[in-house]
Image 1 (cartoon, one colour):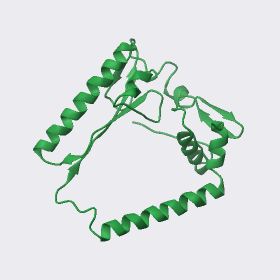
Image 2 (image 1 turned 180 degrees about the vertical axis):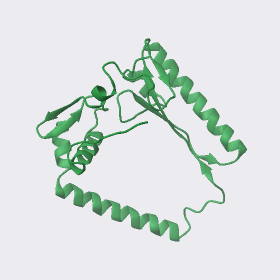
Image 3 (image 1 turned 60 degrees about the vertical axis):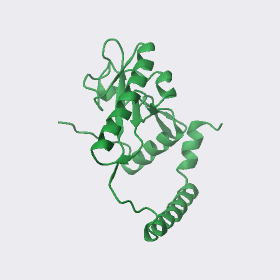
Image 4 (image 1 turned 120 degrees about the vertical axis):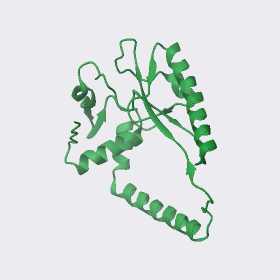
Length: 181
């Protein structure tokens, strides 16, 4: 496999952007055709849920999601401490809402048991309430430059995520500021 930095650099090239734009246009045309032909019509509303969670250790400090958690219904997310659960769509009515809750409960039990076997716990807060050791700014700002590519140390090691991050940094002149009350 190619080096991650090389993959990110390639993904940010003009030729790659042109290919991306071409694919988006092609997929948008397919979607428009499907909408016009009624192939996406649905007689009722649907409901599917995406739940964001994170892992903590015995001291309630942020920790990496243990690999066994990601072998079941848990999906990798942007941060190495994040896990995501997703439900299959159901009708958006009483039964559908109950089905959504049941799906999430089963998935959560599964990932929680896998985490516990690895001495961690999955917390359903979406954003940590106790900052990581060293503080939030140090955790989120822990980056290194590698051959012209910024690599966030606490980001899931994925060329896709690295490329998105580098594109955002390029568009924001190298910094992203967050203000949270």
